[in-house]
Image (tube, helix red, strand yellow):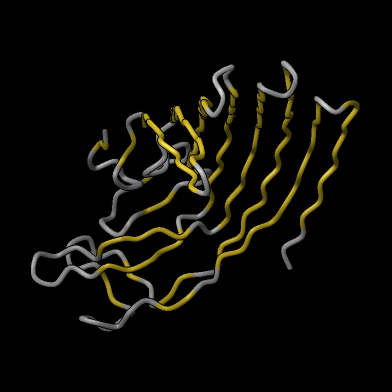
Amino acid sequence: ISPKASLVFKPSGSFMSYATISRGFQFGGVNSPAPLSFPFNNPVSGVPVPAGFESSTLWNREIGVRTDWLDRTLRADLTYFDLNWTNAQFGQNSGGQVQPTAYIDNVGKVRSRGLEGTVAWLTPVPGLSFTIAASYIKALTAVEYTDGSGKIVPSGTEMPGTPPVQLANTLSYATAVGPWGYNVSLAHSYWGAAWNNVTHDAPIY
């Protein structure tokens, strides 16, 4: 059962605010038996490698606003979210130089909080629009965790593949000639630095 509840407040046609709480679910499973049989211990660290992994659940709470300006040619959105992820699933490696085996393990708990905002502008030039979207997110482990290599990942460690700052800009022009429609876009995106895995072995730029 994954419930979701929302409360919306709309005092005018140009302003809306909302609050939402929802639950997500991710199935557990078994780790692939090849090329080694599970369960077994990491040949390097001696850490037990599980035969399977548990289901994970998450609860998301968010509040946001949407506003329209300048005769609805300018729209601005802002959202704050707080997400709690229990038994988060992440890929690990069994270690060893001969036959390292990939498997999935549960990282315990993760908490992710952040702000996301979008501004969309229909310019005075017919068909020309500009959109900018930005976010600031901190996704951190909430309990201590031991990975497959035996490294201790302390609570409060930044999760892999989650750059705190992200930015996307799009300039788009749409027009029609007879029965044909045309659209040309110029896009720019920026991702801040992140980590390749939960033990921060290498940065990703």
